[in-house]
Length: 335
Image (cartoon, rainbow, N blue to C red; front, top):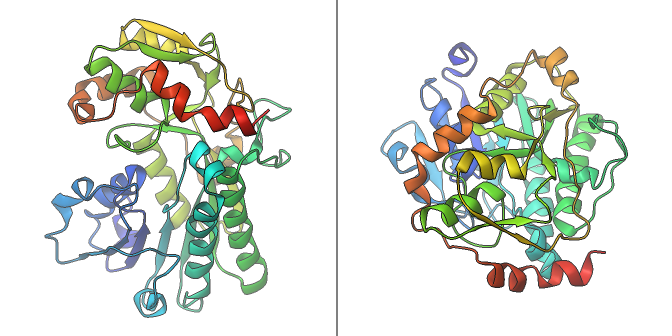
């Protein structure tokens, strides 16, 4: 579908060993393009891209984008950049905001500042819907007031502002995609307490109860990862530039619905402050401008996860007591 746009092109995927990035690399690997993957493996896994590393058209660079010295040389002949590299956890961002600033802001600046804009075709920045905080309107449009609640959300939004600035001043062709709740295979299985599916699948496979925050009625706008990859590629080939789009299903599901589909017992834990009861995107702009819409239903996506549940067999299991300890600073700083 996209081969004619990317054949013989050079693309750079930052965070290419991560959850979404590795799915993007897999898709691009069939298009006859040269792929440069830059990932410091702080959250990404080499196993996610191991099958592609023997391909002569794929180059893996294990470097920190905030510190890399020869970036201008690496990017000199690059046609497209897909910037997915980021740190993306709430509590660690509160505990170490400098680390998040380096990863999410300085890295983005370094990419932008070392581009050969005259040759360059498109910069796709992967942003976060956490920039909306707790929105006043649902479904939430792209023009909703920005209301960042913690350093992760703040630093991702600053990165977004940098990209917009480069488009305004230097005429960089760029699109920002604000992702909502992405799920799918290859999602992170280690590290800090995080996304609900990774937590639940590890609990299910080890026969621990699913830890449901609050009453479980909170709604999340889940999008399957391959639909997100599709949106990224459509944005890259689109003639649109200097635009921001929500990428989501537009059909939020409750946490209790996840529990039902996973068919497992649960326990309820304390509701966290500063966390929205609803994430629900208005995706009309992406539908209209990009002719994009999600194809994988929520039920089908969950079936795919369950079919591949062994991926989470070595993931840490989060118990109620471990979550209480891990989120202590959440309750301390967020009101």
